[in-house]
Image (cartoon, rainbow, N blue to C red; front, side, top):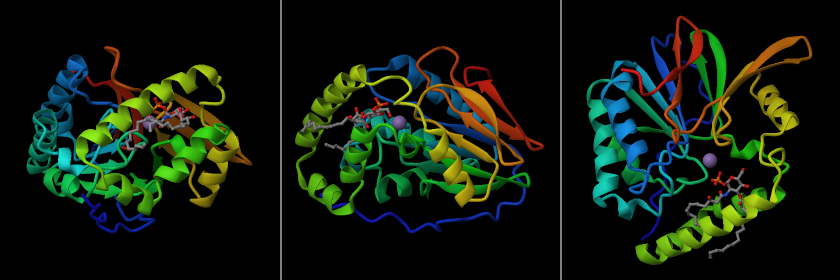
Length: 262
Ligand code: LP5
Ligand code: MN
């Protein structure tokens, strides 16, 4: 299977003047083996997400994505249909790649009716420039991961990988997951966190004072100064515990809410 090129999105867009209710989530890591998370996600899509004007999924919607030729897998189909239903209700759906599902391609986006967001992506959230990223690119102290990332994000590497039969890709992914878990045991929590210098350098580049990301699964709101500028970094959590988290912005305010609340 060859990789269909993603629809091109502008690298920087900051034209969304008014967001009534935006929800930001990430790291749902949907998989058939995690029934609780899947049930929570589907219920969230039918309830809280349905009342938003836009939903931003900042990477790792899936625990692993082997290629769009897996769209007809019954579990994947159920998830994509839930996205499609949401879009039909009028919610604008934006999906960014994560390190687990960067192979989500054109067919996925077309079927779901979602807009692909490049990473990073700048939005104007009720008048405040807000930069969105999955977050893995900011873990610059994790040199081994960054080398791996560079290799697998290469377009020709991905085309070659997608030429392999689906079952073989799934085997490779499963071995890679084991290897990654093994490697993570050897790394400190600090190494696997975002690097503050990388955060500030990215925020300077995009001239913004607010960043929202996932990946590290350490939900928090960090406040810091960049020179005289007061900045904030929101970190989204994963959905493995009952306190699944998302952020919703109403009248410019952001706060964590429990995705299990109806
Ligand atoms: O996701 P998380 O938080 O658990 O860990 C990440 C980093 N690990 C990864 C690997 C993914 O988990 C694997 C699933 C990817 C699915 C994509 C499919 C398509 C590509 C298939 C490519 C073969 O992203 C982890 C970080 C951690 O975040 C924190 O930031 O530390 O990074 C690693 O553990 C990577 C290792 O440091 C280096 C990996 C070397 C790989 C060696 C080759 C093994 C070959 C096995 C099969 C052929
Ligand atoms: Mn991730």
